[in-house]
Length: 474
Image (tube, rainbow, N blue to C red; front, side, top):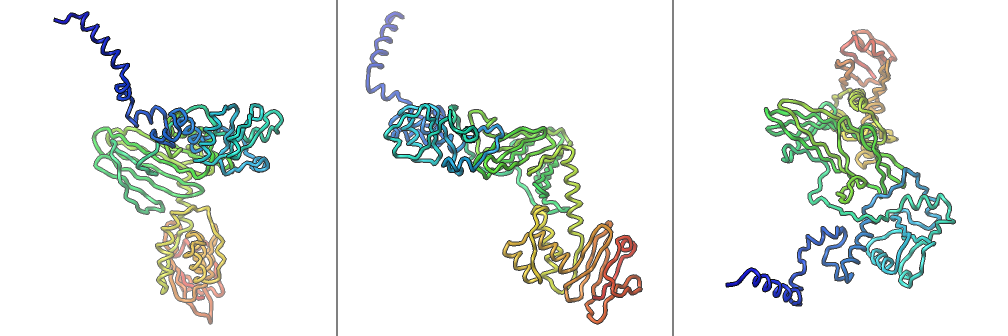
């Protein structure tokens, strides 16, 4: 019978044999690619690429250099970048700046490897610069940090994306721009145009979500979430915002986030009336999720309760109080623009004015106007079809120049270019006024309540408010 001591001796004997056995040692090598990917935090390469670099250490270092070039956001401390001084030094501002303070022969080799996969401005510190033969293969710059101008040095350091910290970039497999979930279930929207807003309706047995969108010197999103059930409901709003530039800097503001495109010094504001979370490279620590900027809000709704909030994305900072006021001003502005319908023989014109253009205007920014330099309908319509004219610009040309409704705060003037009989239904003070146009070149007058006003094409809005119908002979 084997004693405990005997078993211990046998275990030590075979354990030594196992460790000394070459065959058993190879069988003990880690095989899980997922395991090693996570440990190395590789972004650009896969683990099996180590054969190209002959060691996992080289693979990791080269991948880190490439990751910095592709993903890292520089810290500029809000410095305004001088593109001219960078160009004069020879730097290509369309490529990232990678400044190397200290290095050795192996690191230079890794930089050359990385240059084979991505393009960047490689800059060495002259104080520690040693010329290696391998550097003859690539383009690089040498900067004397002691004698270079302060302005040049500050600009290079501000754009430097070289970092010692290793980070993992997580890419979304199922990329989406905008998504709403109820208890982890993704809701599918129905889209419609209602009350001069583009509306997306997310609806199921538990919640009703309405998202109204409009463009007025930026994008406004008005959220209204209603819990229809008798139990608590969890709602998530996710918005992956795609940034189109190369360098960005992020700063928190009282009710949102300010994003600065560094090279062009352009500002983008995200303002909200609720506690929306913003995820971007600077606050994602070791793991960065693409796209770089994610907006996220998660909350619980009590039974039969309602939640409302507004999100604004644009080039100006808006306070919480002004967010709701901005929506009221937008609605008023749209009502002042789209305030008439037409009935005429030209069905194309009728369709454009009454249906198509008013719906298209809602999808465009009200502050972006084109110069509609056209003398007739066919020419202006051609510019619109060629996308050289916005829907709003075309609509205003038809309204003011072609149909001839010219208005200000106190008066309405008529000066039509449309050579046919037609009827206008003009909305004023929440009332519809019928204005009949008769094309008779022999005489011109305005007929109000049976009274003719010859050579008159102007009426005060105060008088217009008192009548329901008028006729113009033009």
